[in-house]
Length: 249
Ligand SMILES: *[C@@H]1O[C@H](CO)[C@@H](O)[C@H](O)[C@H]1NC(C)=O
Ligand SMILES: *[C@@H]1O[C@H](CO)[C@@H](O)[C@H](O)[C@H]1NC(C)=O
Ligand SMILES: *[C@@H]1O[C@H](CO)[C@@H](O)[C@H](O)[C@H]1NC(C)=O
Ligand SMILES: *[C@@H]1O[C@H](CO)[C@@H](O)[C@H](O)[C@H]1NC(C)=O
Ligand SMILES: *[C@@H]1O[C@H](CO)[C@@H](O)[C@H](O)[C@H]1NC(C)=O
Image 1 (spheres, protein in one colour):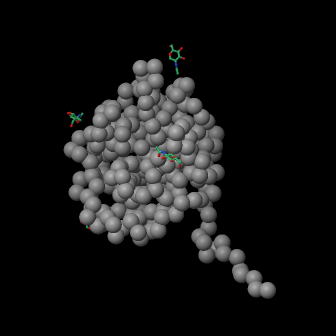
Image 2: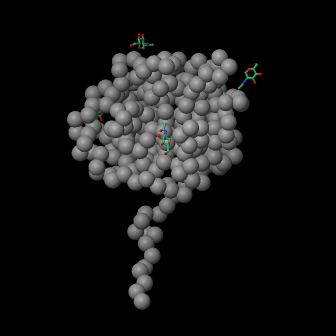
Image 3: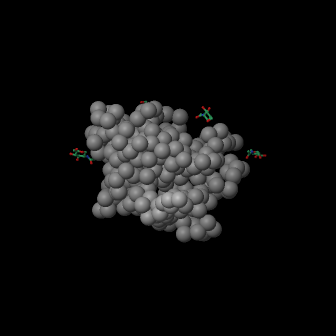
């Protein structure tokens, strides 16, 4: 488990102004209604200057992709990335999946523990995770983010955008922890880590996209597959409750 000091990042970041360009993100699709996805989290990497998305799953935890790396801060309850200042961000402790493989993108999942609990209001609300590993779900799902709106370009969005995608079985889904959709529409660069919502449940995490047999394929991490790992961290009692009485000889 890699642990970042909660306060470290903050000092370095006083003058950074993360934000997208004027264009709208996600390839195809539409601009989201403000406030319609209160679990959406904008993620800024202060080492690489890259952006990712994530989603709030409890008052203390955000889920994103492991390839977004660990030197990040998060912005909760935002719609537009314009004019954002680092003082609007929350520091986190990053917990990437211990078996994340940066070649195959297997286990491309990371938990971010918020250094202070998320407020709960109209603009900030967690999304549900699957209740069990085998939970059935609709193949009509919604993916959203502030990422690029063109393949292989960096037209990052300033406002949240969304598009419906259809989950399909394809040979591009190479491991049991992957879900795929095919077609031109879908997540683009910068949408990594965002949720794939099927029904009202976050069944996937945006991980990668590529062209296979002249078809665009988007790949998501299957959250249900990782439920026991997620719960082993999220449901851990606070440290002081776990502490064992110390024995003296
Ligand atoms: C960011 O913080 C400033 C003050 O620190 C506040 O005025 C502004 O509304 C905040 N913006 C967002 C999007 O929360
Ligand atoms: C993948 O991980 C290896 C070993 O930790 C590291 O040397 C390499 O730079 C990483 N590659 C990428 C693309 O991050
Ligand atoms: C994406 O950015 C390029 C270069 O800045 C621009 O020419 C193009 O019109 C943009 N596309 C969209 C859909 O905004
Ligand atoms: C898009 O997907 C979401 C999530 O599954 C669903 O609630 C919504 O009805 C879908 N919208 C369309 C237009 O298919
Ligand atoms: C690509 O398409 C060809 C012909 O339709 C098919 O035989 C092949 O299995 C496909 N490859 C992959 C990786 O899906």
